[in-house]
Image 1 (cartoon, each protein chain N blue to C red):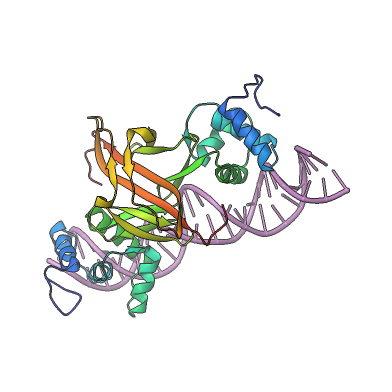
Image 2 (image 1 turned 30 degrees about the horizontal axis):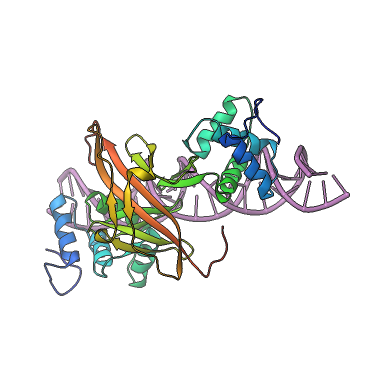
Length: 150
Length: 150
DNA sequence: TTACATGCAAAGCATTTGCAGATAA
DNA sequence: TTATCTGCAAATGCTTTGCATGTAA
């Protein structure tokens, strides 16, 4: 397996992601390996395309925005990451692949995971003509410091 | 009260909205009255800025996109409507002002309300430094006809 | 009268696309 | 070798803004 880091740990989130990439048929190119490492070697993250771009740049590498977007979409389709839309003009990509919900601090733009077990959610049964894809729960809060209503 | 329709019903959603507009201090201009009527005289709706624009045009009136967007934002701030972001490139505005959740049929782009009572949701208590603003629940489903995974 | 609102066109911004050159297998 | 991928720049599409004109009170 072609790794981006030196130490091989077959159980790391990064190794698992690489394995899934190879198995899926898409090529584990240099760019995809760098991005997989960025996404999965720092624990659970919520990152935007732009932040990811900047992070790559900080390591003195360079991956074009087009490739960042394409790769994020491919990883999403592979189920490696999850896209969450908290407001109309930015998508965040979530690297926690366990089922979970989100706490969004609106005035700070910060997002945190809420483990599924911390929320009790019962939904009515879905009609046979529909298949459940996902349930998004976003608990939207504001920090008290922010007194403004809008 | 300046009404856009002929029959005065002080208990209609439209009348209530007009009242809230007047009380809020913003002027109940012709455009705002037309949009309030469109939004609140047809029951609970989920409508985009563009659809609202088209609907106005169908009645042989004309309101600019800038005004549509400004008005939707103002109505949202007044609590008359609620903005829901189902995917990154379109906001829908929801005229149901009762607390509720959403069922989103992804491959059709259709959205339906789920009354709060139909879903059992318990969230952990919020830290004192945060105030709860809203809880979004979006049940994402796909119609079975759509066999593709992505 | 005057503060506020509207409409137009232009700007903004995240994301996508077309295509020539590069690269993995 | 060849199908796939990358990067650039241009295009797209939703939303916002600047500003001159219009309008409610």
